[in-house]
Length: 452
Image 1 (tube, rainbow, N blue to C red):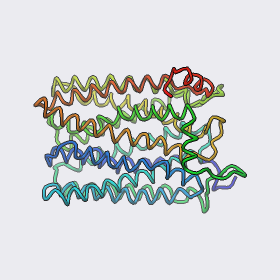
Image 2: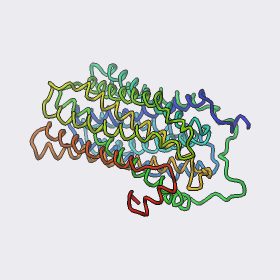
Image 3: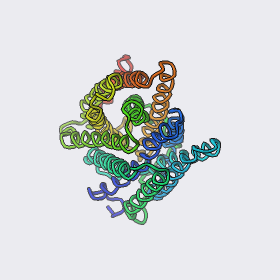
Image 4: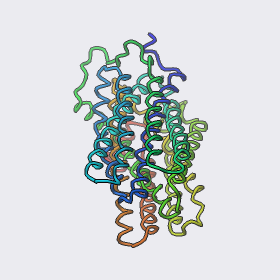
């Protein structure tokens, strides 16, 4: 093969992991830090940042379309670079708009909507193209491990950024916040730019099957949805990420309102959670002998099913502990609990990502990918985006409603954490129904044993 189309080596995969680090670092500003600042420092209802984050996820529902365009032969590097530029600009604009909340509300809200639209577009364009490039240019045997490596690097980027930004924000001021945001967004863009330059070569079109016309977007999407395993996996992604995202926008406000933490302390708490995610991912990556799928002619990624189920159950247990923490208050060991939550999240997430990469390369019921890695990754990205948008908004809105009806902060957080634990248990049940054997999956669907 030519250098442009040969499979990526570990160095090339690690370079793409740096792009994931850059995406995660920039998104952390909007989904974690600015969320806390809006609610605590600017006394806004939690539904405001939740609605904005939900909106940026709604923009990402177009991920399958972007992935399909990439499958038709467009080079993916320009999509990654352009998406990162839009994402970085949106991160800085969102920070500036947040500072405007101290004045007239209408101009601030208008700029916030524009900024979060830019964030959604940037994440969708860069993230989908990156995953398509990784799936199409990584050798089959390396796909699960490559997925684990790139996501570990993404979490590492979030951990480093959250910890560094948390320290840089002390003592807190609006000027310091804007400076930190600009440094994070600008640095992330430059890192991603350097990471992808030249990785595709001069010309790296995505190969299409010989003599075959590329399918139209609707036909391609319908064909993928008719694959029982792909469909059930899409549902699992939605439910598990719904559970994951319900606490994403309320953890830092919870730390501030119930445990009295400062912005810097709650940001470092978020960094501790992601450190747990990182360690959980490393555990699965190192101990995931199921990555290789040796001796199996079926979808090897589903050998990770036990890790997925265990991670979901562990996450449910940690959330039940957070519900108790809300009831007990500052005497509860919050930091260890949040770390365990992140650890369990990391286990299920990297196992699911490994399965996702395998399924993207596996293709349809005939076992061929058909050059559709982009639209497959886009479909699961859209499922995740929909779950994150609904979950974050529901979690924050439920907290607002609970605070109003119950007249106290702690019981509202307790209720939401308990609901999230139940949803994680539902995700664990769905994961037990995943089966890499196509004939077995079809038989189970016909008999009503699993969701159609």
